[in-house]
Amino acid sequence: MLTFHKLDAYQFSIQFLQLALEVIREVPRGHADDIDQLRRSAKSTARNIAEGTGRLSPADKVKHYAIARGEAVESACSLDVMRLEGTITEDRYNRGIALLERVIATVTGLMNRPE
Image 1 (tube, rainbow, N blue to C red):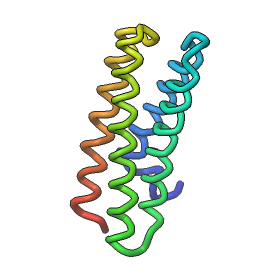
Image 2: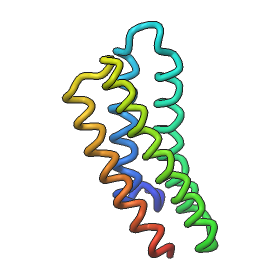
Image 3: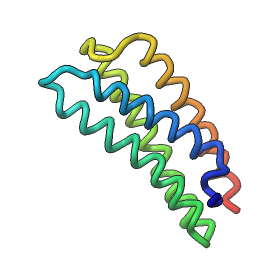
């Protein structure tokens, strides 16, 4: 198991990515921009957490964790847009926001103590 696999932030981000992919499969045609944005930000969150873990200097770690945090916030905005458009169920919206809150909190913790 690689170091980043052990991080709660990474595990929460992967759980969110799984939920995002479920949402994406059910979005009706005509919303390609929403699908693309959510897919890219969800993947980028997990990727930047992993990349930050692999960096050697604390500054490099913080930079990638900060990007991951920003991408998680962007994903939350995408869920808000989809909720307004009626392309996501209330249950999936709530689950997604709860996971993103965990991602943001745990990534913020990593930023505060980049080891």
